[in-house]
Image (cartoon, rainbow, N blue to C red; front, side, top):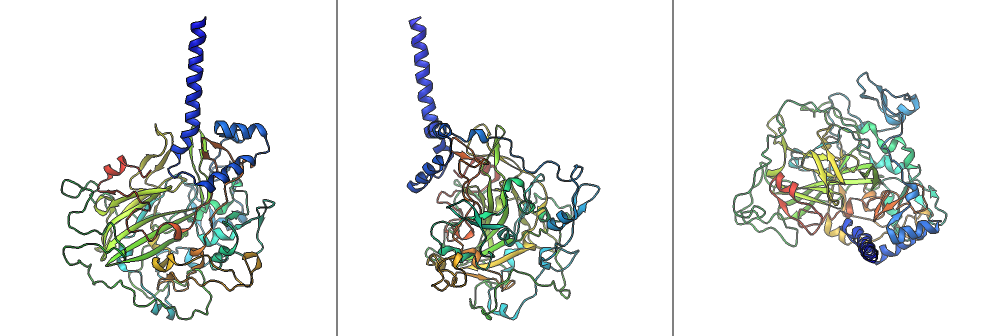
Length: 565
């Protein structure tokens, strides 16, 4: 009896110690970026937000928070789509930009009322926008950037499609921390978001709708790309297994350090740079913008009927991408392609969903050395991977154009990957994973905002005073700050820039523990905070990666074996 009791005591003690270790260290293991003192303070406040004593204690000591809220979180509400009992009403169709469902279950798109022509892709027209006189003083987007622009396979079962950030902002307000309400005292748009920087503390753009009611602007089904007209070329015509010669394939063998360069640290070159055809014509001649008295407006314009070689509209989405070009000096140009979605649907572990958030910025970056693509960075959650150009999958292009890289967007999270399939991360045994496949092929080069960014000027920009016309947006006694680091490219000279300098989150703050939508298990939240915008994605980086840890991958196999965390 004593022996049995002793064994039971040892077992209980060992189990208790193990549980304490799991509760203490598992959240730290799951979070590659540990919280600082301020975040730990906010966490204590978050736990205390629960009105239930038992919930607070279980959360604090066992890491099980809001377990009474746990339920299945479906991507869409029941009864939506073809074959359902819920038929699309005329009003719903207007909101979506969808005419109806055809007999095969595909959406038939129509122009949404009150939208610009540039949001749509009418049959076989030139999507190039008309140039204004002021565009003569702005820097062109180099043709090689468009020639090597990525093609993105969205997931075939995706529910939250590419969105227009301008439309997203229309549905957002500001959270009143005193009573928890969402205020919309002032109209927010891409031309005034930076004025919010004058408010005290972090500003969170907050949904005016309950996101669990799945308002249609979250899905943006009208952003589903037009079916890509495949010419039958093999999408694997690039060699995804190609590696650099030598004993250490992670280091270039030509002596050119393009993989770690900026204006203060130009690349080392043994030989003179080899330019693409046309020479180094990408360099900027001036940054001035004529007609600054005209208000900025979203990109638009009527397509020109006179141009020849009209672009093929296949792969077009009415959710515009954002192209930001950064000149790092000495022939190094980074082309950042940002992709915006109004909602990030998190992944599930044992049927429980984690990681939802309103607003989602993903990106890839192509590094050019004198017009020659050298590598691409693909963002994944809080990190990402960098691939040498020869390793990437390519798709052949017509008319003698160079093959373009093909990348993959994960379902829900929209994380970027170089291959289709399963992509486990953080948790062992593939409990948490992204999934990609060869779904609709999106060509962001057909519809995008384009800019040049001076990162040296951007590092010197600080929080701005507010607009004198809007007391709600800040202190009315001070004039608005003039930001100069971001300049529209010549193809959209009046594209708004204020949105880029907004220093707050593009989605809701972390929902409190008292909120019926929220739970947290071992440090993983059902709903997390919305993301910061492109300006805070380390555009000034000298390395290809977004984080300091950066390993150049020279094959797809290397990428599958490595992780960013």
